Image 1: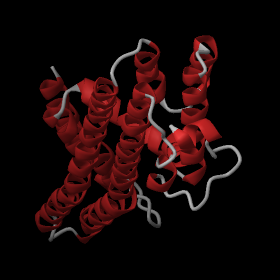
Image 2: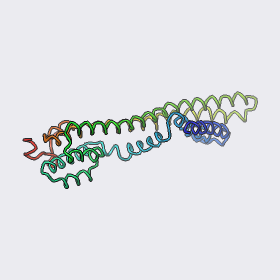
Image 3: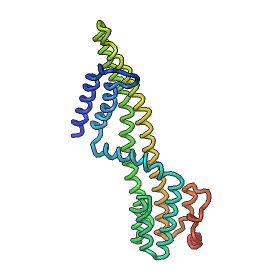
Image 4: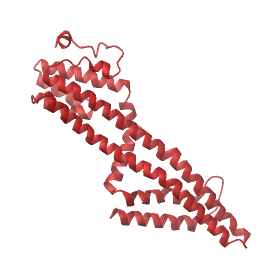
Length: 262
């Protein structure tokens, strides 16, 4: 189904862009070129990937732009470690209800998903393996979205060249009619411009943002695997402060004496 849809989008965009190549050209706006570059790469993506993957890519882009960056900085790591310390103290104090509340309000999805295993007295090695598996699953979705965006970044300049060839064909067809040379030249030039701008100005930066989010998920997964595994086994998690790049423990993150001694 997605292949047929992609082929339809591709053909419709090329036909519509060529048909509207004679539209009035003003400045840097050319409707025919815009239609080709806006929809033809999307048609290629629909052919190469199923609709579920494309929808997941849109979600990942939204997370990278509006949630992922905010969630990946030092403040987020501080919140993650703070939640881990608070959760560990509640578990060691036998306060299961408080520990459950900490998990419920935690920002990190991996902590919310894997934390109940600690409350169920699962061995630390199994908890760590579960966290790593969950992180791997999330990273796999991120990598798939990054691959889609990289495909679009390669398709955009390629269809810019397609539009250029279409425009040159129009120019050669109308060499005897100088009044009709302008639309063909506009299509030839503007599709190349739009393709380069779309690839390097939109798709490549989005792919980089999504890839950066994947790296942050990997770091959070490693911290949580060690932290939750240590809590489950009754070991100290104070060394996570160093692994997270914290120069010094704040009052919020500093472990209590029993955690240092554990």
